[in-house]
Length: 368
Ligand code: PMP
Image (cartoon, rainbow, N blue to C red; front, side, top):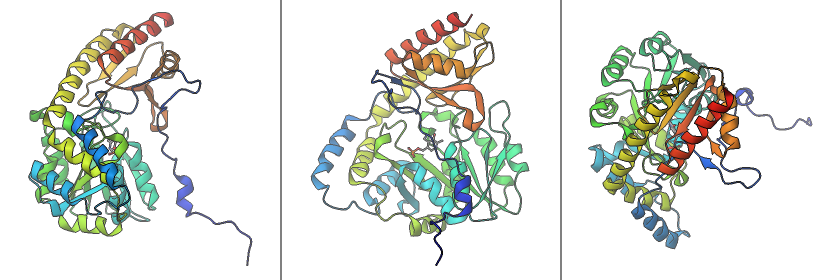
C-alpha cells in the first residue's frame, strides 16, 4: 500500500472558493454592512415570533419535505406544490440542479458578470463553464445564444442580475427560451424578483408552468430578510424536481426556517414596505451618485436592492473601497468576477444611506 494522502477529484482544485464580504472589523469598530444585499429593515415580526416558537421543537427533525411551506408557496404563486423543491437557501437549489444534470464534458453557460455560485456549481460536478459577454453590464441574450452547442446542459441567468442590477424584459426571456434547443435547461434565478414592479415581471414563473426545460429559483434571504435562516425554493417540471429531490439532503430546511418562511410569506405589508423603502432610496441614491458624474462616477440602472457604481474617473473602485472601509462602510468590490472598476452597494436604512453618501462625497473631494 502506498502512503499517499487522500486526493480530491482533479477539478475540485480548480474551483476558487466563494469568498463572502466582510461582516465585522478586525479591531472591533462598528461597521455598516452594505455588501450582501440583505434587507436593512430586518424581517417580518411574525417571522421572528415563528422562529422563537420553533425553538420548542429543536429536539425533533424538521419536516424533510417542507410540506406546509411548499403548499403555501404554491397557493401564493398559483403553482403545483408537487413541483416545488425547498432548499438551504436558493444556493442549495442552484447547486442541486447542476448536480442532477451536469457532469464532465457538459457545458454550463452564464453571463460575464454573473453570480459567483454559478461558476462553482458548474465546476463542482466536472462541467465546463462557458461565459457569455455582457452588453454594457446588461445581459446580452444573443451572446448567450451564440454560446449554445450540443454540449450545453444548463444556462444560469439571474434576472434581475447580481452584481449588475440589470433586468431582461419578458420579451427577451421569451426570445431566449424560444431559441433554445430542448436539451438545454434554463435556470432563471429570481433572487431579486420581489423588487420588481408588477409591469417589470419577466414571465419566468409563467414560462416554468408549461416549459419542460425551465427551473425558477427564489429566496427568502432578500426582501423577506431571512438570510441567516437559509431558505430558498425552486419550481420546474415534475421530472426535474423529482431528480433534484432524489439527491438533496433529506432535512435541508430547518424547522425554524420553514416556520419563519411561512410567516414571512403571509406578511404582505412587510414586503410592500420593504419594496417602497428600497425604491425610494435606490432612486434617490442613484440621482445623488449620478450628480457626482464629474468625478467619473456612473450608476448602472438598478432593478434590485443594490447599485453597481462604476468608477471611471481618477479615483479607482479599489481606492474608493478602501477609503469607505476606513470610514466604516463595507461595500462589495468584486475583482474576482472581473468587476475591477465597480463597487456594489446595498441600499441600507435611511441613516446608513445618508452616512454612506456623506462618506462617498468626502472621499471624492479628498481625491480631487
Ligand atoms: N442568486 C443570486 C443572484 C444572489 O445574489 C444570491 C445571494 N447573494 C443567491 C442566489 C443566493 O441566495 P440564498 O442562498 O441566500 O437564497
